[in-house]
Length: 468
Ligand code: FAD
Ligand code: NAI
Image (cartoon, rainbow, N blue to C red; front, top):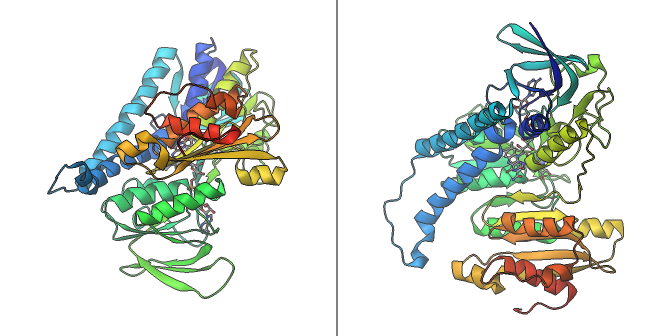
């Protein structure tokens, strides 16, 4: 069956693809979106951002009610975990949101095609499902096929005892001892969920610090706080073997730089060492779309691939694998197709780890500024000195602002502390407007709020903080 006349066929219905499809339809284009999962929203809504945040919230409540209310004079006894109900709530949240995207497609007149998309040529996508094929003719194709779990050589993931993030969102029981490979976003978020629910958690990280890409000072503070919460770390350590033949799993590790091996026994292993671009089955080689040396679809600065009329965005191309980055790129492609000239500043893509406390960053780290030879000023303010943080008893962490030494223009912000993911947005907006640290410091912030810690860090950058 051939259906045609599309201006844009998007392959992949994740945050990159579905946003591109909706935006393009809003701009008057005829659009179809092909996804093979059977539910829209991609990795993010189905097995990523949303279910992990639902479990982080539920497990936080469980820990707070179990251990955190006494100091507020609230006595609670008999707190019990109903893991089945917690997981069912998470699945319900996912279902509601994925169906919400279907509703948005209908509202915006985007045709949703369930099937695996194969790009036959720049003007034709074939969607295959259950042995049937639908041919969609189009003026443009957008590759938004996202990413998949990066495997650990020699370790086979069964999503039961040896899991990726997907299995870690659905464990049927709380592990006695969860061994996490990789102290990145997934390892620390999912490790936190299962620690809160009662697991002993050991995190093995190849490099010598947690969340290695982050500002060094934040990473150190993050590790200190996570250890205080009960998480154990083996940094500068690599996993060399996983033996799951017996009742317990035996994981062999050794120092990354070489040295004596040791064996750790556990009952569950989470492999979270990164994600890789997903291009399987798209037919890219035949149609001539080039990949880079890391398997990502190669694009120019307007998201054009090596084949005219075929575009690519999101996790499948270069850049941080984050939903909001994919969304911005999706909007950009749609706007370009109707002749607009959108722009993304890749220096202003915030990143947030949704643990307690949250960790958020935007712009350059101190390490990056040093490496680039840029002279900068740093202003820091601890939550311990913020009256709102003190009132609610969330005093761990700090706000750090980095500004150019000569112009005072804000170059980066790194926050570890309560609501860091919300606080970072103020700095991102300020950076988009080219603000100086003085601009932030002289802006009247409401009292008593956590936001005042951002103002004080800005004061610390261009002058001196008041409350420290
Ligand atoms: P995806 O969301 O991966 O969507 C691609 C879609 O394309 C998938 O549905 C796939 O089935 C489909 N597809 C692939 N090939 C084909 C084909 N040939 N035909 C048809 N369909 C195809 N990011 C954040 O910003 N915040 C978070 O809190 C966060 N948490 C995360 C937690 C976890 C556990 C994980 C794994 C990821 C998380 N991420 C988070 C990352 C985020 O999910 C990704 O960056 C985002 O989903 C990328 O969007 P995308 O549209 O590029 O691709
Ligand atoms: P990651 O890149 O964040 O972290 C992987 C970690 O594993 C790194 O610290 C790396 O040094 C380490 N590592 C690599 N190989 C190793 C090995 N053999 N042994 C031990 N450690 C090893 O990747 P992760 O956590 O898998 O997440 C994938 C991506 O998904 C993230 O980079 C992020 O883009 C996205 N994500 C975002 C979230 C958010 O925004 N809150 C939450 C979860 C995922």
